[in-house]
Image (cartoon, rainbow, N blue to C red; front, top):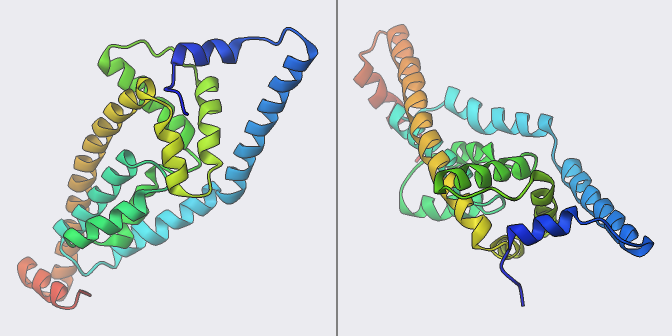
Length: 229
């Protein structure tokens, strides 16, 4: 049976030095295992790969969009909110469920969910823990190295539900500050993303309408009539 996460216990266990050769060897093996897990993640992901994905799934669809500025802005906002608030690995599934409820550009939203990804997951989520602890007035007794060690088993999981179960087993002492920070960041970036995207896309549409000698509203109607359903 899994036990709830205790940050004080985890911190003490992590900083404790082995008293004999066998304990030292065990600690060394744990570090090697954690390093191997991190190497596996870096092998599957790279900044260049993420950068290409952001351009292909975020920037390019917006530049060629045939939808209204509000539609594009909603898609970006949803992607950012889901990216910040849903654990890595489950964002695309959650987006698919949302897409059944109301329309938005799934490709654009999916691209913006990669604001959180396996490359930045550990430092980002540690930031969640620190921010949430600060907001709740709790001491953030867990240091980064201990947090990183706790997260590696989650990254090792092959399936999202297994990873989510391992994430849930971290316990309320870590998950409550995490959830508080996730909601705060999702709200800030969701609203900011909507406002910036709407402004940029509206300016793009106005410029395009002027080049065609059309009124802005007429251009929007013409563009929306040709937009894919």
